[in-house]
Every structure is written in structure tokens, then in C-alpha cells.
Length: 284
Image (cartoon, rainbow, N blue to C red; front, side, top):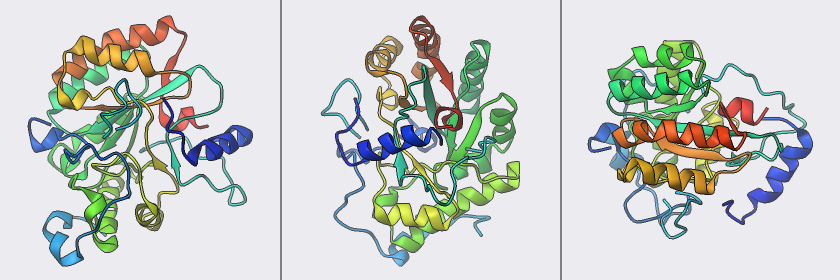
């Protein structure tokens, strides 16, 4: 389900353009209060957030089955021109093509990530992993593993803090620290930025993402709430019940149920004629 907000008009414009956990390592992108947007009561000062926002090497839930539960190194260049700037945020593609994007918040046990990537590749599915910078620092080999499998890699902040509560300078530091890790490991900061612990970016986050070099914030419009660790059949049922052409799905690495659900998800997509492609492919 697409949130009936101002982004509908932006998506229509995109169609015209025809372009674009149990551990801290797998924590869900929710602050536990069911907040889904970027409109927040306040931000901490830079001093208050300095411990969580600092990062070595620094120099970038949706409409699901239950409306009450809300919470790239992409190699494909954007073909949008300065005269046609991208919308502030994308959560659904209006191209009409039978494609969807399975996007994964990158954190958690790398063995689970490896199992998931192998399953995707066996089914010719290409994924988008929005990686937590700290995770890449602990498991740097995963950056190349993702890209070498034909997937794309993006930015999900350095420490996966509640970025909506940070002062602008601290939010920028979170984004830039992850971008620096991506650049060091892959040569590119990636195409996509997704804020941590919120579905949507507010104007402050959009500005900080742009300052860090990310032209577009990647949100999502389908969320099977896999980070809550329901049965794998429930994950698949929720996802397949909500997905449609152009959907951007939010999922998480580091959760066994998500790995177990993926074969059913991919089979269900195939039966509907839907291809799982990277976000860059979806919005191209």
C-alpha cells in the first residue's frame, strides 16, 4: 500500500521521466514506539549525540499488511539531469514494469547474509543492501561479496542510531562516516541512502544526505516486519500479500526467518511474473 501523501505526485513525475536484531547488529529500524515518519519532537544537540555519532574513518514501517504497525554501491548511474532533479525520497517506482526491489538493512551475522545472498543468486534475484557502516567495519569482506554477487550496496548510517533525534551536524557525521567506509571498501559511496530507525526522511535529513553526496533518499512501501522474527511463512505471506509492480520492500539481514522465507518469496514473485531487481534498476 502506498502512503497517500505528497510523494504520489513525485512518483507520477518519475513515471513521466521514465528514469531513477537480537543483537545490536540486527536491530530493527524502529524506535519501538511505532513511529513511521521523520516528523519528530526534537533532536539532540551534537554534544549529546557525539558518542553515538562518532565514527572511525569518517571524513551518506510502511505500508504492510498491518497499517497500525508502521515503523547502493550501485553501479548503474542515474540518467536524470540537473534540469530534472530527483524527488527528495523514493518508495515506489511508477514505471509499470513487472519489477520490484528487495532492499535489506545490512547488519547482523555474516553467515546469514551469505546464505541469503546465495539463495537470491540461485534464483537470479538481485538485491539492494543498505549497509550499516559499523557492520562493514567488522566484516569488510561483505562489501565486495554483495557487489560481486550482482547486487548493490548503499548507506544505512554508521551506527544505526535514531538519526531523527540527532542534531544536523551529528546526522551528517553518521551519513558521511558510512559513506567513507563504502568508498574505502568499494571505491564508491553508493547511490542510495536510507536513514536509520525511521521510514521517512524529514527535510533536515534530506539536506544532510545531499551534503553527503546522496541525491535521493530510498524509503519503502512494503514492510513484512521481518525484524520482529515472526515465522518465515508469515514473512512471506505479508510480503506477497502487499507487493505489486514497482514496490520497494524493506527486509533485514541477520534474521534466520528472513533467510528461510526467501525461497517462498522468490517463488511467489516468479509466479506473478515479478522480477526482483536492484533499486537502481527499478528506478532506471
